[in-house]
Image 1: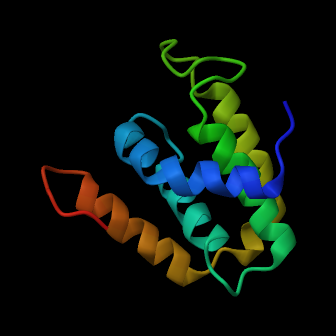
Image 2: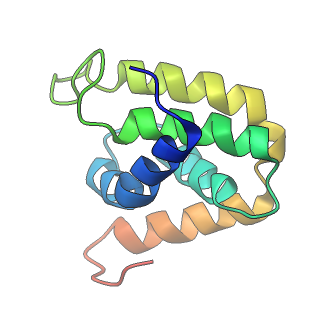
Length: 117
């Protein structure tokens, strides 16, 4: 099913942070996904980059996709494939600031820290 950029943005805004916290340590692209989120929500990011990242992140957030996430070892492979294609296309737009924010987010949520970011 095809979604509009606005629908993808709503999906990401509503569910990305919770999904990122839930999958922390489970997916090998956590840092890049969170950096992509910060890039996609940065007002200085070009529109085509935002649309690309929001589409990939919405696919990651959605509970129903080609390979459901609950399938051990395989559940995130389709998410990873979609994400990495988008990441490679727009990586040059992900700034050091986006990466630093991702590290802060992951650091705050990797332990038993009750704070939210």
